Amino acid sequence: MCMNEMHTASHWSAKKGNYVECGLCPHHCSIPEGGVGICGVRKNVGGELGAIGYGIYPAVHMDPIEKKPLNHFLPGSSILSLGSVGCNLRCRHCQNWSLARASPDGLDENFLPVKDLLGMSSRDGSIGVAFTYNEPSINFEYIMEAAPALRKKGSNVVLVTNGYLEKGPWRELMEHTDGANIDVKGFTEEFYSQIAGGRLQPVLDNVRTAFEMGVHIEIAYLVIPGYNDDDEQIEGFVRFMVEKVSPDVPVHFNRFHPDHLMLDVPSTPVSTLVSIREKAREGGMNHVFIGNVAGKEFNDTICPGCGKTVIKRGWFSATSYVKNGKCRWCGRKIYGKWT
Ligand code: SF4
Image 1 (cartoon, helix red, strand yellow):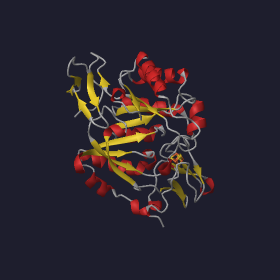
Image 2 (cartoon, protein in one colour):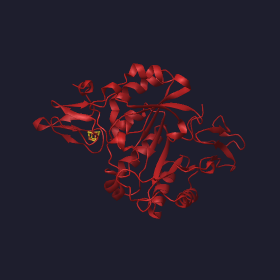
Image 3 (spheres, protein in one colour):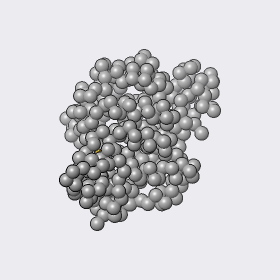
Image 4 (cartoon, protein in one colour):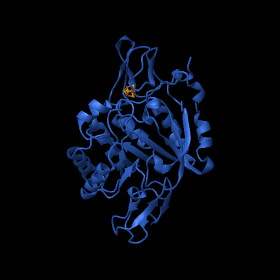
């Protein structure tokens, strides 16, 4: 038997007929005995919900923090990055489907005990641990165990997440998170239901909550031609970020490449991304980046106060002119984690 079938999940309730209802994310899967939820890593084992992805991390790499992407979080540093399997969304354009659509069955050799992770987290200059590559929040129990211990020893905890979690568990997770890159995948409920297999509103609520709780956040918006690049969605997203969150939160408009079930959609033209960046700046966003496109001019940080470059970026390297959290030249505060 897989050892992780024995790890009981949190946030579920028993239902009639030996069903269980998982309350971790807005899907609220009702799962019959022996079945798994949409995410593939929460299983009804004898009328209890098992976290069968607990500690299964087949992908372990050291990455530049800019690759998450987080551009205002200890720029130029490296972070131990872990990827598990499964996802609670069903994006037709998934760029990481080999992990997101995989099952934890048969992956026991990839089990990483928390105590081993603690030993690895600051090796080779790592600033901490990023839970990334697949959706990390569905491995809620492991992160809730590892994150406080990591922070206690001075390691940063970073999540790269779709933000699709119920409010209560999301707050619990954010209490132990230093930095998060959160996807906003489009800006209509129709896009979320038809392309991503979820709902938009819970994600927007969680973006606000994370920011209000003081977690350093950055947003990734993958621009898919003909699906989420129209003026209405872009303007709505920009308005939401500027008016309901903060104009200072860094936003990454990333280039789409054909993948998974969207092989018939062309890559995003660079001109589209440049035009969206201009709209976002005109709409009041202070830190707008273009991702998955070569060219450092798309990724330098410009001070909103004096217009000078405060972080110059190369290919995953960075030279910072931010001093004590402020622009070295004009003294304007720059949103981010710098020390
Ligand atoms: S976390 Fe998984 S099992 Fe739970 S509700 Fe979401 S998709 Fe369903």
